[in-house]
Image (tube, rainbow, N blue to C red; front, side):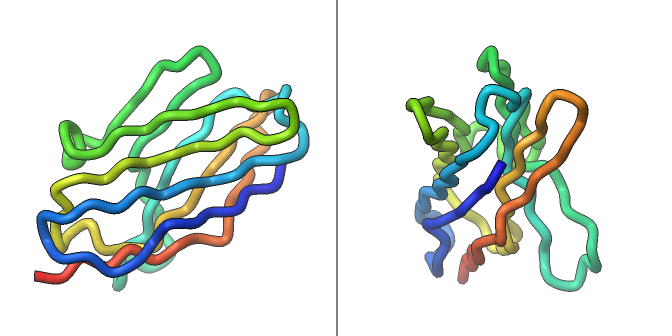
Length: 119
């Protein structure tokens, strides 16, 4: 599975951004897709932001509940994962990575997209 993210950028606190991730490849084998983020100064640790399974069950990090919405759309050759982020806060600043987990626990990552929230 190949993942390509888009939609990051710079926004003021309280603003909104929409991240997208285009997935191609073994789409039939994807069990779940999600967004992780890695904040500056946090080393190599990535934290789960939101996840959606193939049967549309969603999970959110507590700090983003009510502000972020994850969704997915499926087409013949591409799946699109979207993260709508509203009421952004400076602590949301991070590199956001798209993730796809295949059955058999194969994990795929995108290249990351920077989100910066200023005061």
